[in-house]
Image (tube, rainbow, N blue to C red; front, side, top):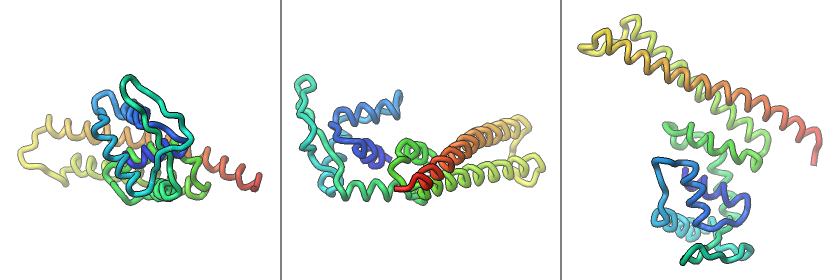
Length: 194
C-alpha cells in the first residue's frame, strides 16, 4: 500500500521525503507511524527501480539541520502507479484499505477503469455481506456449532457478525453513491470529447 501512496503523491508533482512521511503519518496515525528510517530505504528502492527520481524542478529546502531531497515520478513510475490502481486481485484481505486510497486518485484513470474499480468494490462489499449473513443464519439455526458455546457466546458472536455486516453495508452504500457520480462524470467526459 505504501508504494501506491508514495507514487500517488508524486503524481501531483515533486515532493520531498519529509513531506511524504508527514502525509503518510497523517493518513495512518495516530497509532501507527512511518519513520524516516523506514521511508528513505523505500524511496531509495523506488529510485533504484527507476520509478522515481530526484526532482530537478523542486527547490532544495532545509528543515532544521536536514537537507530535504525532493522526488518526482518517472514514466516507469506512472506505469507502475497505473498497474497498482487497476489491480483488484492483490491483497484481497486488505483490499478495502487499498480501495479507499485509490479513490483519492481516480482522476488519473480512464472513466471505464474508474467504473470497473468501483463496481469491483461494490461486489467485494456484497460478497462480505452475503457471507456474514449466511454465517449468522447458520449460527441461529444451529447448523454451525462450536463446541461448548453457551448462549452468551452465541449472542456475542452474532453481535460481531451483525456489526461487520453494518460496516460493509455502509461501505457498499458509499461505493454505490460514488458509482452514480462516476457514471455522471464519465458521461460528461465522453460527451464533451477530446
